[in-house]
Image 1: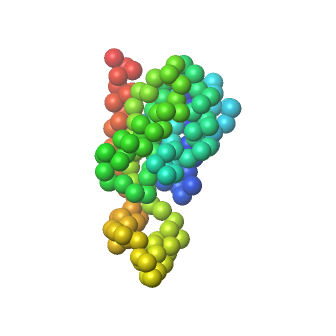
Image 2 (image 1 turned 90 degrees about the horizontal axis):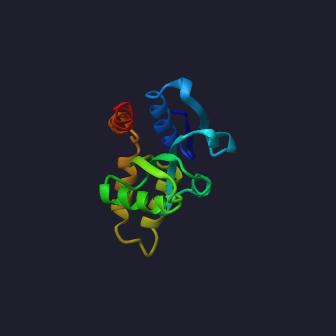
Image 3 (image 1 turned 30 degrees about the horizontal axis):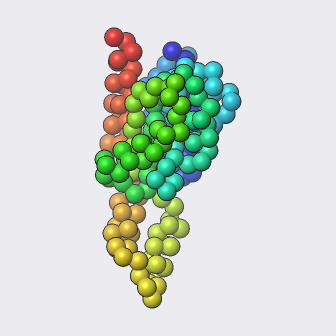
Length: 171
């Protein structure tokens, strides 16, 4: 089955996931690897990666998803705020709303991803402002926890999810 790996990666996190996916799949079946492009549309299966923007996929991926019809789609993404399966599920549900009903979502995976240092600096300014944001210490703690992600455990979980789909194809 011919496939494309289409992703948007603002900080490199989602590209790490995309690279992990292609390490498992036959290179000879790869149609396209990179940011959204018409060149990718010839595939039967799509591995589509995004970074989270206000609880949704970024706009570039949302636009690309709207063009797919009758395809198999595996969604993968990263979110700076994370660690919660419920939060990740909420994001994936929001992303699936961009997908035409003629497509089949065959799987998904999300993990936490590091954020730019400028985000932490903004949080520190918020903490030191005359009217600090509630729970800002937890927000800073989350930022610090995200610095190491995606880590090897995240990448292995993604590979396991993709391998599950690959094994189902073989049966």
